[in-house]
Image (cartoon, rainbow, N blue to C red; front, side, top):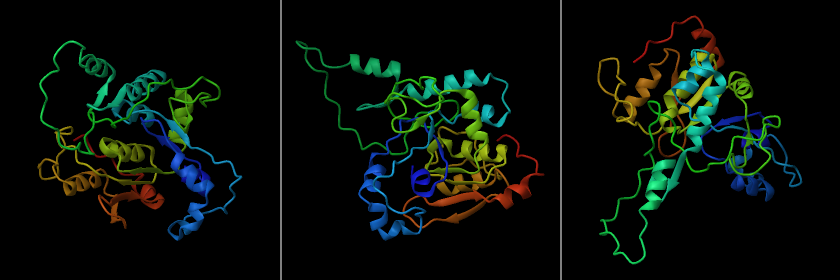
Length: 284
């Protein structure tokens, strides 16, 4: 949203959850971006509260192996089928008070509610706070998602006319348009993309695009086949960074200036050009 509205840079978000830009729109309307000096170096426009804010395109998909193969041209499945399956998988995930579930699991959880006239089930000890890195593994580590079951759009030029399925994003409802946006991008960016970190880098490498990816959680149990060059399993954040950097000898790293997981893996256009003749790394 900020790239599109504040910097006039076209952007597409590949995200399984509905998008919510209410906070950004509020800061824009009240001029917070221009009042706070932290933002000044990143602004490419003057404050005009009457300006209509724009939203990025939204591909509501899981960045999993089928989508990666389809986007990079390495898969043999029909694009419409992959796009439809990816959209259904993204919409099938729900966040409930009992955690992240698929549709059937949510219905089962709802059936377990207390029945009038019957004694309540024995109380369980309180659960610890949820790990922000917990997710659902799909197709060997797909992105975790949040709730919404609305459709992928109404077919009018790729933009959804009703509120719901894509939240504040401009919905893409065709595989053809989705592929155009993915392959036509100039840069792949991912900040704490959970299980999709490797897929984001692999997609950028396959499409020969510059990228900037900041991984977060390791998800060692969801990716048990990951190995470092010496054969050790990927178990720590440092292991994950080393593993991801091993996807290409041209990948660089640097530390960003904020708290938390902040190691940036990236390739510049010059790095991509240098890697153009390199052979891709084999499957781990």
